[in-house]
Image 1 (cartoon, rainbow, N blue to C red):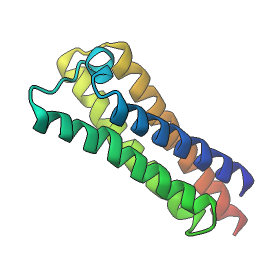
Image 2 (cartoon, rainbow, N blue to C red; image 1 turned 180 degrees about the horizontal axis):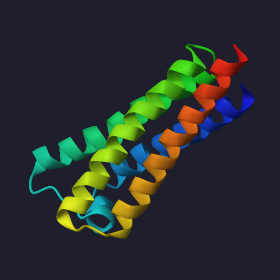
Image 3 (tube, helix red, strand yellow; image 1 turned 90 degrees about the horizontal axis):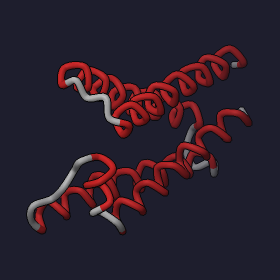
Length: 128
């Protein structure tokens, strides 16, 4: 259980950190990911999804570590969300020929997070 809590804590910190950074320095997404907003609505959308959604997920995972809800549920959430995002990123990269550092690092992190979450869920289920 302690490894699962450490892992969920790490993912929570990464998500909150990335979310706060995206919220405060939205324009940095242009250079890093090639994403830019052409009007205030676009900036709001980038802040909402790259800032608010990431922060919300990170805080939710932190709540699981604090005992507010199940670590198994938190692991499932990480596995499903990171697995889906990673899969879509990989399929998109292959179909578009995208080999940017942002895409490769993102896909690697997402697949790694999904795999670790699945292994930890399996371990917790075996202990039950």
